[in-house]
Image 1 (tube, rainbow, N blue to C red):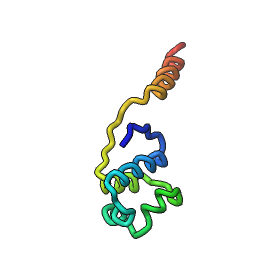
Image 2 (cartoon, rainbow, N blue to C red):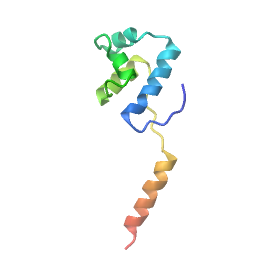
Image 3 (tube, rainbow, N blue to C red):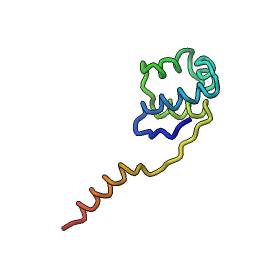
Length: 89
């Protein structure tokens, strides 16, 4: 697993692919663990389906992944700069 930054739902694909490889799971097993019909994991992995919030929750549970919110330093600098601009009279 890596420390890849996740900014969009599509960014999860690389994380899931690495975890599936690490666990040596076939997509069919991931489908079963997530409670999906056969083939859904494969469709996610090849981009035929876009992950929804519910999909992200179910996939992460199936792969024993959790979220750990952290501050994105690049985005933090932008947010702080915008906040300073708004405070000026």
